[in-house]
Image 1 (cartoon, rainbow, N blue to C red):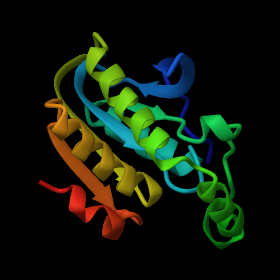
Image 2 (cartoon, helix red, strand yellow):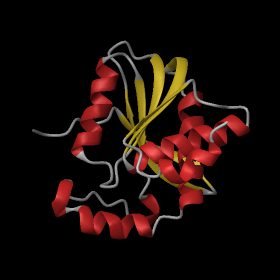
Image 3 (cartoon, helix red, strand yellow):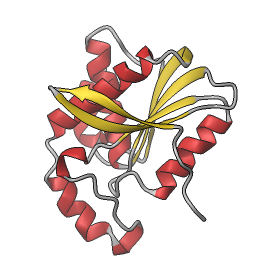
Image 4 (cartoon, rainbow, N blue to C red):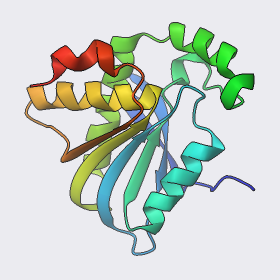
Length: 163
């Protein structure tokens, strides 16, 4: 099965550079927003399919490419890709990546297609990132309207960020 194609690939401004992010739109063209953060394997077909599922439910979905500073690789999912994924994630600068995630949240909020609340959602690596982004955004007064962290691998190290 082929992965869904985003409606548009955006460039999100981050520290004078551009992070790619995939935009998925609902049939109505507008709706509430969801920033969907990737797993450790990158922006895979699974992540694209979940983004399309959310768009089919009426959400405007933004999927930032969080490995953009590392060449934006997409790895094999599961056990086959895990050794490379663990190597790759060890190269990620966590603070910069949280900043990238926050920039994606701000970018989605600014989109004219978003006409309701904006939420953050992440899987695995992205689940921890969603939690960290929500905590940072809360401290700046711009918290997302909801947070969903599916098996957020970094959560045990992030609990001190919770209000």
